Image (cartoon, rainbow, N blue to C red; front, top):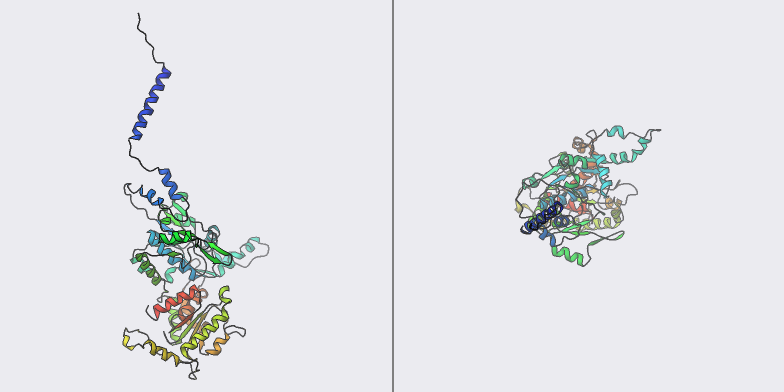
Length: 489
């Protein structure tokens, strides 16, 4: 009898072999060490959050065991806006943040004249790119030609160009001390995404660029103290009052930006003296160093002009001064109150008497030679000032169009202090050094008229004592210059 034999058919044989392969594969996979799911890690890095959760640290640490690779240089950029004083605050914040993140800071030019305020990224970038990209502005911005529609459409942009100037920040400040401390800075003449990505050799913008989209001027604030940040959110105090009511801002901690792996981290506006609350002693010290570096230079044509005017007035510390803001709406409303306070405070310092029949310059009491024995005590200085009288020399720096005009709100000041000098009283030749400075984008364009307000404020900062406009960031900066240049603080 032939033994029973049931051969496997070809179809069944293939199925059996496939099953064996699957079983072996599963056994192999389960034998491997467990690792975090890369999909989850990627999601945690990109998850939009106001305050980064503690879980982020755990997920990020899962990649710490990876073999070390050569660190690619990473960059931080931002979009400037508004007047020069606000731009300087933005620059200060950006310098500190770049130091905290160990990124090279991309610094755009400084903008002078009438500069537009904050707006959404696309609109702000479009306007800045047009104004900073070299072109034949003189031909483009001729007066409109009848019959040429394009010449009329270009009118608004050209009007903006005529009231706008660009200058390198290095003409205003010496950045070498920061470079010596290890900060990395790259200056950018053209504010353009295409230009920047090309210069940084970024080929995949989607992968290598993170664009932070602001939805308002104060879109976020950074807090190093995590407890403070958490409490702020819990108490719902993350807002500021504006004309339109409460406006809430995002509360961020440094990890929010530290975790970004893109080559370029491109922020929107970063304005605000309270934008970042710093508690780390090292970073607080760096913030002070940055503030020192962002004092105006005196070894440039700008400084040469200021020194000439100060000497014309009698020398550093020989006069009193007032920095009187009147132009912007908040300051216009306070002209009368500020004027009365300026008159009252100056009178308290120099006395109510008229004094001599001539204008009085103040005697030197500055510690220029390092000999403290030659300086008056605080009480002696106070007594000396009180005898000067209202004929003391005063310099008034102001954005008022015509302080001495018949209808000027500032006329009572000149009645009280007749030995007052303003910018329009100065001889024209003192401003000649400014002719050396030309526009960065269009070198045929002089910057003189845009630099006059800076000169005005810098002269005021060379006074013995200065009165400044409340709630003005520019006035606050002039106070800083005054302390550095006159009182060596």
